[in-house]
Length: 115
Length: 113
Image (tube, rainbow over all chains, first blue to last red; front, top):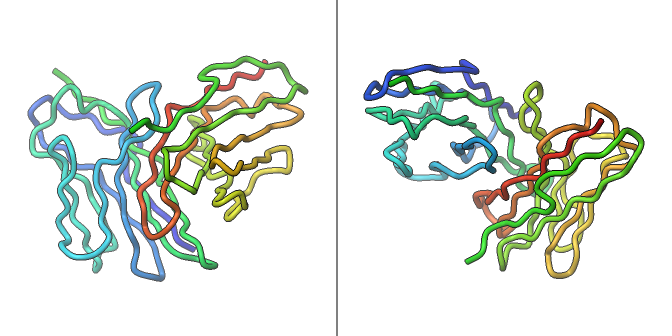
């Protein structure tokens, strides 16, 4: 069965430091991969997505992620953290089953940015 | 273009009552999905509707039901509420074809006392 594992339910970084949020997936078919962000008391917002083509994907707010098929990973990075990046981040994998698309989310990683 | 609208944003109910939540998708989107979000379980998929038909369903008891109208608006209903139903209920819409991203509403926060 397809699944998503996010390593670390909480990650804390200093402002200006590198942000690295880890995501590994299992999928028996080529996946589509997504990162979403959720700010307090809000819904989820798409940061970036990988469908086909270039494996390094750039998203909003300076985030990017690299699809590594051999490692079944799709880690999210940002070179320099900003206070406004504090939020919860969700990795998701999309796949087709039974003729329709299903989306599986990881359990989320809460990012804290310290001044 | 208006986003996904969920109503009500907050509500308080007591055990045994029922609740109906509403979701208006982005114009042109035919697929509406519902998720339950709790601190312990994270995001759990409830069901997806596409063109008024339930297309996918998660592992929730029959107390949780939904429907979609011809204008793509959707409602979900929870009957005989339990304390454990307290959660943020998120609605998301997408075009419904291809690997489209989900567009989420801000959610309806349900508290069951």
